[in-house]
Length: 199
Image (tube, rainbow, N blue to C red):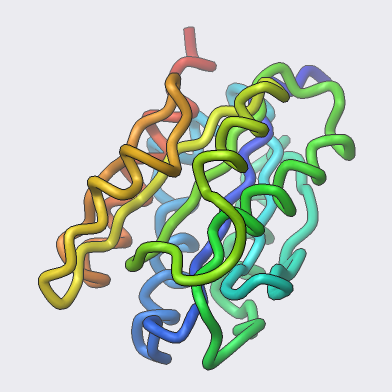
């Protein structure tokens, strides 16, 4: 069955994310997938989903492997995995370049998907690892789109960093004003990423 979009969701679990904020991210993702409009878009395009958790330079975890959204049961199962996903790392730096490079290697597993999209969520700028712009450019040259959710917290302006260094030229960033806005932000982002498969 045709696959329009392979959507790889990468979740920041670096030192700036506390236990409650991690739970907001995982519950927010699960709730977004169960939203009626999101579910319809996922099913219409037979979207493939996967999740990576990331933090420091050598801390990337292939948390939920690729799963095809062929039925509501597939969506329900994925939402349960997202909600119950154990946190991969604690007390670690923020290295988005390594997260992007790690994620980019996973699309070989879904070669039939027309579009390849990496979602990067985070609440901080890079403080370790390689040049983020270089990793972003490498992904773009591979035909991968990078979108983001910039979680603004503690008065730190993260959206500008995402716009300058994370997203590709065909990508976009959605701003969440704190972790409590993350659930709504990820819902809006997934709809925007997958809505085109309905037409």
